[in-house]
Every structure is written in structure tokens, then in C-alpha cells.
Length: 299
Image (tube, rainbow, N blue to C red; front, side, top):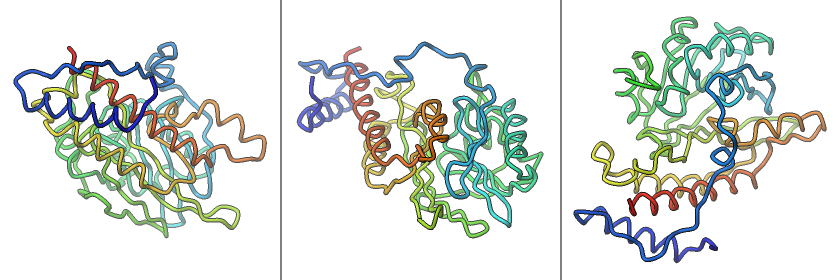
């Protein structure tokens, strides 16, 4: 089935009907299945995804210091560094080793940021904050979750927030300016980070996507804890489409093709300069969202 605007509008109409009625409306037609590459691939364990990966310069003063799939980024300056996503608690020693291998000091991390309040990206915040003394800044809608801690599988320890951020707030350090762009849905405070960096005499727009994925389609329908989830995802796709992007990064290496792109760095052409890949990712995530919404409404 070819994806088109009319089909999107049809699905939105069904979504509105399902929210207004006692039970979900059932579409007359089914959207074609849409699977992302990481959903279609053989499953990987947490241990595989959290294993060491070579730290490397992405572009300018932006460095990858994460694991096989849990992406962590170091934004460097002479006045200290910004770390995005400490990942799990047991990721922190791996991140520390990667930072030091690149020639930077782990204790020079002054600000800790996250993409969103899920344990695979934020469970290590408390430990990293204790080890470095860094400030922890987070989007307003995810701040309460971080301060009370996550429970159950994928949980994480509570951590005191140093600064509560709001949509389009700026985080500045050592000449770097990161913009916190609210892209909600995956969590209420899911954040996409944007910044500009210099490399080879050129300025590049870097976008680090928080996430626009749907882990569980049931999350989209009759969600009493998040009644605006559908509208928030729709907002996220509008926002992501509006962002200028030269360098495409994300909270998971799988989202931006880390395992495929990293070996290409030896060619001398930077594979992370990928505006077309960014557009394709946003389009795919939007299609996957509407497919999962359609499926959930049928259940």
C-alpha cells in the first residue's frame, strides 16, 4: 500500500472517533504493516546493546562515547563538557573509559542531559552526577519522573534536577549552545537536542533525535496516564520535519545507522553528514506510528 496524505487524514479521523466514543472505531481498511529495521532484525540482548563501542569524533566538537546501541554524546569545550545520555548505571564505566580514551577528562563533564526518562538513557544519571559533580538538566515534563525515580523493569534511581528546561530553552557552556526541542510522545518530556558545530571551516546543524518510536501500540489508545499521547506524537513529527539537519544522530545507534556508518569513516567522507537519512528516518517513524495506531484501534 502506498502511504499518502489522504490515508493519514483517514487515520486521524479514526483516532478522533476512538477517543470520543466508548470504544475504538474500527477502520474499514487496514494500513499496510510498517516495520523499522531494528524491529525486523533478530532480537539483541541488553548485554549486546550495552557492550563497548569504539569512541569517536562525529564532527567538530561532537563525540560518540556510548555503547553498541545506547548512544551517548560528548560536546566538548575548554570550559568543560556536556554529556547527553548516561544510559544504564553499568554503562557509566564504559562511558568514562571512552571519554578518557578520546583524551578528555571525565570529571570535566559539567552538564548532564538526557533524551528522555527511560532507564536505557537515564538510569546512569545519578551515578554520573555523583562521580563528576555535574549539573543535571531535564525537560519539564520528564523532571518529576526523574526526581521520584523509575519503578519496575527499566527503572532507575531518583536524582535531583539542577535545572528544569522548557521547550526551546538553551543550554550554554564554553561557546556551545544546545537547544532543547520538545518532541513528546515517547515520553511526555522527550527531547531532541540541536546544536551547531564547526568542522573544516563549515558550520553544520546537528540534530540528536530523542525518539519518535512506539514501543507498545497499546500505549496509543485509551491511555489514562497520557490522554494526549496521539496529539503529542503528531506534534513531534511536525517539529522534526521543521528542523534543519546536516548531521543526523539519535538516542539509539540503530536509529541513525551507527553500526553501518562507523566503518565508512575510514573512507575520508563523513557518513554522519546525512540530511537525507534524517528525513527518511522521520518519514519512517511517522508511517510506523500510524500503522501501530491503526492496529491498536482494532484490538
